[in-house]
Amino acid sequence: MLDREGFRPNVGIILLNAQNEVWWGKRVREHSWQFPQGGIKYGETPEQAMYRELEEEIGLRHEHVKIVGRTRDWLRYEVPDHFIKREIRGHYRGQKQIWFLLRMVARDNDVNLRLTDHPEFDAWRWHDYWVPLDCVIEFKRDVYQRALQELSRFLTWPAAGGHTHERRHIARYLRQPHAPRHAVAEPETAAAEPDCAPEPQLAPAKE
Image 1 (spheres, rainbow, N blue to C red):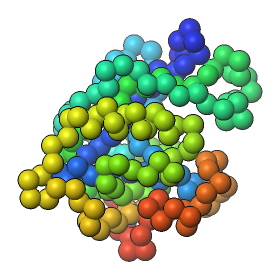
Image 2: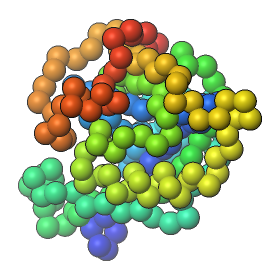
Image 3: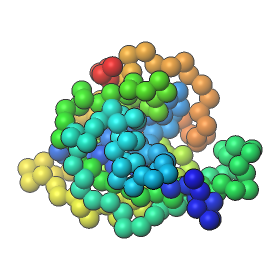
């Protein structure tokens, strides 16, 4: 489903914990990290699509989160031709997204990366709100920055905790990770950007 300009309607999800850290997922078999996102199906509202994608991608349901805010309008990004399937080149330009800011009211072990047969992520972690954009595939970085900036107006910081820069971030992995393949994202590796890479102490994700 494309609009007249060739953009597919889509939702993006920024999920917060109690410390205003964001859920940060590592794409399956790649060195790139991103927020959950997905297309809006015909007949769905953006909110309905958000709840569906939230469950499909990270296993959380309606009762596990509260909506804090959303972007006022669509945020667009164009996809480079070499990432577009040949049969839709010339018609498809990219994504237009409504971004939702959610507060997680469930436990960490309620996250389930294996709910579907084709998981989007093979690891996840909590990260400070201002995520390192170098970890994100290049053509999405501007939208990430605009979404984070617009939605930051909804944040309230814990009185005692403030920003949690010293909090230990531990990556949670699938128990049976997929075999590695070439990343389709940036030429930078996880080693070149330490904040992108998972830490050595690992806790398995719930299956």
